[in-house]
Length: 250
Image 1 (tube, rainbow, N blue to C red):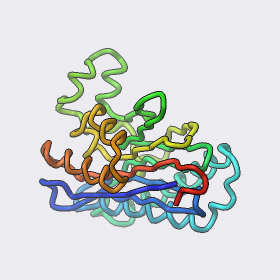
Image 2 (tube, helix red, strand yellow):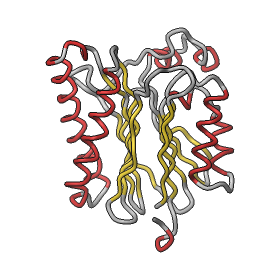
Image 3 (cartoon, helix red, strand yellow):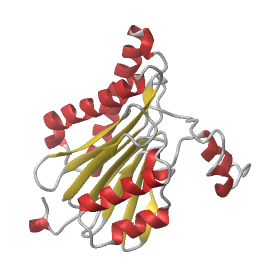
């Protein structure tokens, strides 16, 4: 399995409050994470960093216990519950961090399947023989308005409350996270990203980049460049995973 992770401050923000990474267990077993922090006084940076560091630590110490997709879901649920409590406790103990939180999209991938956890509006897309598909759902006010028929998807693109989330990690004790397991087959790609990318680059352009013959690193560079050329008002984070033939992955 091949992977690339890239994050960029963008052209407007003073700080990068996105965090992420790709963490391996052997050649064919990995965890990809993107977290987009929110909160004043750079507290979003703390929430997203706490999330990624906790997931990396848990992965390094317990990845070997995951044998099936059910195990993957339970592993993700257990660590996300702990992270949610840790962020809440940190905010309660540090007044400058009050109200902080983070989105999270995480993909736990093996040679055969990938289990995705998501909360907030960071996204995961799948490029496969069936095309390019968004496989997570935005937990946002605007998406709720689209689902209820109050506004169209076109109107949602420029809605003034586009950045208002209905769910985030670290903001409520009663956390609801979406989990989904998909087949992840040879020559498939997964794209995880923060909204700094998805708000600035169309799905058609994302698909075009993933389908190109460029290296994974260049694909990530091009996507980040596109987001910056289209304004770059937000931090931009990208993870691309490529499922390879057994002996060729790494």
